[in-house]
Image 1 (tube, rainbow, N blue to C red):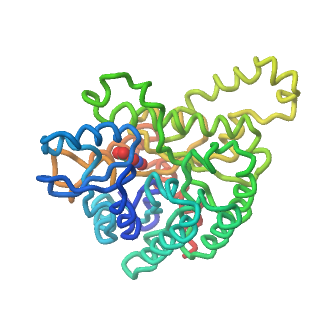
Image 2 (tube, rainbow, N blue to C red):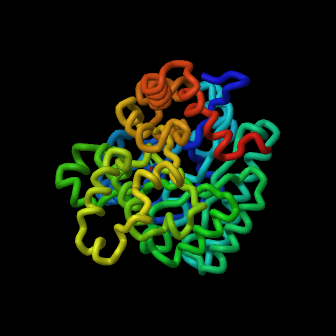
Length: 382
Ligand code: 5CU
């Protein structure tokens, strides 16, 4: 896909570095990595919806891998050489790697600061490897469970790391979501240091929503296809309603999965705001109010990980083609019927969606495939 003048950049691509893998291996409740008798690779079990099937496996003799909870931990999760091979296979020039969910959300407050330092240092070292220089940048991880001073110190630490361009953040914040006033100083510090926040879901929706048949019969489809995007949508809507974007106008958010359902639902959010008697009475719907549409075009970027030109066109219409950036979600969604060392159809679907939505070889398509990321994340500065 790439050429010397038109870089292809993957802004949504994860890694679990060795220290983090060790941490997950040492755990007995989710998130964890566990070996199962008869299975070649250990399994990574992270999603709340997977905890139920983990419990069921405990009392079962079934060892067929399609019945085991989670996903196999292959070299794609932690190996730098494998990441570079994946990039080469798909014509990706530059990747902005990030720790995958659930980051350090579960780490005890007194351990979180050191854990974040270790993980961020591992990312910094990977990006500084001779084979990776100029090809890898990263979004760092914050110790959100740590005391406020440790958390703010972590922002200071990551801003000094040469290849760091932002931080990856889940939706739980300090435990009360991203509309928590206590997070505003953190957002201010990130904005002041030009660190983009890559907002990524993990928790989905409560498992009752999926009904009693989901665990046995529907696999990962409902939590991943619907729970993840709704979680992101709700988190950003809450930030908008709390006025976070006005309080921190320099804050820049890159939303995973093309903003969840935000491009599709922004009009409905707007209508509900304007027709809410309570908000109107409180003067929150006055002439100075920035609409959700404005915030989408001024403070929000979207990745292009939506697998279809239909969703991608909505993202372009909402945020503009100059705010969209290609991504793969590697190492998630490997091909199940072909060699993992070859092409991944999950990647091809996203690249095809860009071509179909914006035209093959157009300036807009090239911008989404890499030009936007180079500018927005300053990837020309090594
Ligand atoms: O397959 C999955 O569970 C995931 C995940 O957990 N996180 C992600 O970014 N994509 C897929």
